[in-house]
Length: 307
Image (cartoon, rainbow, N blue to C red; front, side, top):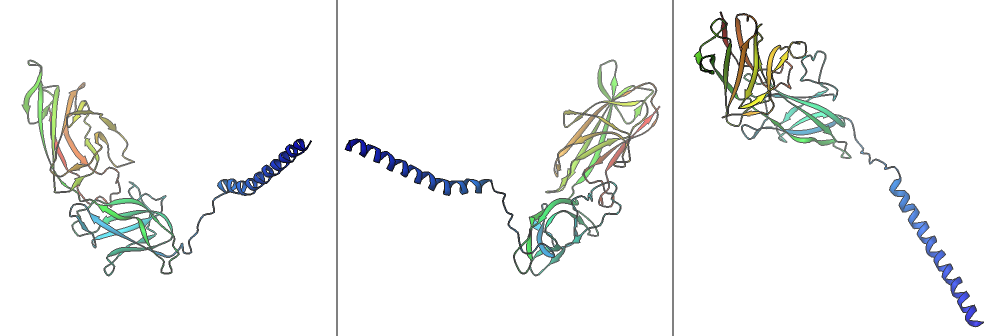
């Protein structure tokens, strides 16, 4: 009987111990688990308005900081200073250079903005830059913060020179082996134009864009190769979005100074072609359509279409 009582007592004691353990786990574990699912309370900073945001501008061609002859302008995120039509846009703040601290500064509220940096020198060399930036809030009494990103890179535009050659199709040899100086729609009905684009300028670039070709009735581009690779020829009939019409091919990567690029286009006369001037225009930096920001001249070369 004593053995039975001891066993019963042991079971009771063991059960009580388990209850204690479960109680401890409940009171410790449940709050811990619930804390993982509780909504996070954002950590707020004391100052969110009237902040002085500092940043630097860097010229990638000269490997040096830019301290003058540019205008850093901050716009709302919903604004597009690079658009073809930008009437009514105005910056919410404009940066100035602090020569003592060696930084650019702008007074802004915490949040995100579009930063436009444009070259305002008497002879501009730099492409405009458009970067999304953010201004953090702060607990610092001086309300001074750093822009993110802190360093904005500016690129200098390279120079472009163009040359063009024309070869007519020889129906006897079956090759484009007749060198001509113009497209004569009476003498021939197929041509190959080769546009050579020389880019010059150490550490400078030509930003990605389009090569436009004017449209002449009855003269149709059938095939195009850019640097030996076939590319799509697109017809643009709407000038309202960018001010341009005609045929074009895209170059989707930036060209660097020291490079030579080549565009081969095969043309055919369909029906009776018109005479006129066939122009080739390099419209670089297509993402920037604002005419007030495009300080450079788009290079162009042309050939005559005669009969």
